[in-house]
Length: 252
Image (cartoon, rainbow, N blue to C red; front, side, top):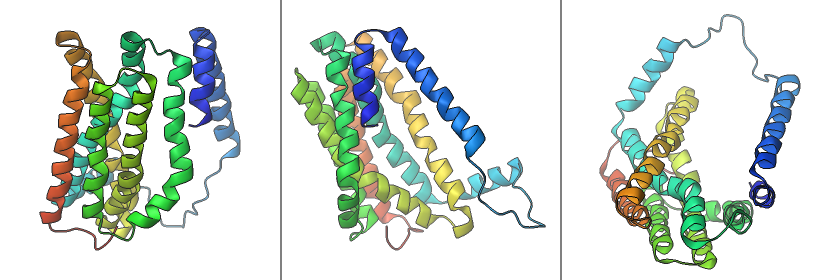
């Protein structure tokens, strides 16, 4: 994540064809490594039965009966809609409206990756001392602030600041939310719960960029960022409402 955007930005600023061909070659190499060198480490005992599709749906319906889990899915999806604007729309927005090209933009996602590398452990140690339902609204509050910074900025440093602000929210909320969901789940179903929880990114990805495109075309290019700020505030309020729900884990 730290090296990819920088290398990609340098290549794409010269040739998109070379960039996509290079990415395809790297993914092919990764696929071959996976195929030939990654082996299953889970020991399958005699008499164990593989979980079928019916069993998986049974776990899903069980999870959806947990109000805390459902509210968590909704809260995190709202927050991730803001994240999709930063990861999908920002590059196009700043290039077409502020003349910031691929090579310069590449430092923005790289900054996110470097912050995760150097700050995640320290921040997680601090957030673990507090109840998850108190930590997550604080982290989510960084997202609407980041949306407003983008809306009000007109230069590279403003957009970089927006990514820094959003990344602090990510560092606070993402590990806390993952632990919260894992602790909500029965011990033998944690993988399934976390798998369902991981769908929130794709739900947000199907809403955020399309909604931003419609708003940009019909109103103005800056409108999606104000709309993102509103969605971010809704995410904060939704996280706050988790405190009133039963069936919550004792700690994060």
